[in-house]
Amino acid sequence: MSSSSNQGRGGDRDNRGGERGGEFAEKVVKVRRCATVVKGGRRFSFAGLVVVGNGRGKVGCGYAKANEVPPAVEKAIKDGMKNLIEVPVEAGTIPHRVEGNSGTSKVILLPASPGTGIIAGAAVRAVCESAGIRDVLTKAHGSTNPVNLVKAALDGLKQLRTKSEVERLRGVTLS
Image (tube, rainbow, N blue to C red):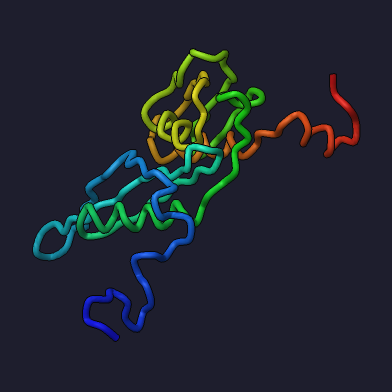
């Protein structure tokens, strides 16, 4: 094996994770500092919340902790890549109104006409942008904790169905 290769016994470590190579964009939503009280004082660690998406209907979120910020973000990105969901995007917006819940957070997502943009807070905006949604109206009720808002937005997006999916599931044609 040549010394210039970065491939060792663990294989090509830089190219793990499947589709990640440039196709998925990561958005860091929140980095928190956590403290553990020990005999000698406080020991700090960091928790990162990251939203990953390809801008064409695939989106996921990851949450991870580490002793420094960069490893926490990297671990969160890997976690987000494991939790991807498929979102039906029609003409830059969502097919119908949905509500998502997580903890005490509730997010309402409404389809919007072209040119409206993403009307949302920072956490829900990151999810919508990563999914490739260009026009949407959102409203958050209850807790505004970013972790719960991201999970609630993803819960709502999971419930989306296209017209053809609904017709197939119900066995009828819709006008």
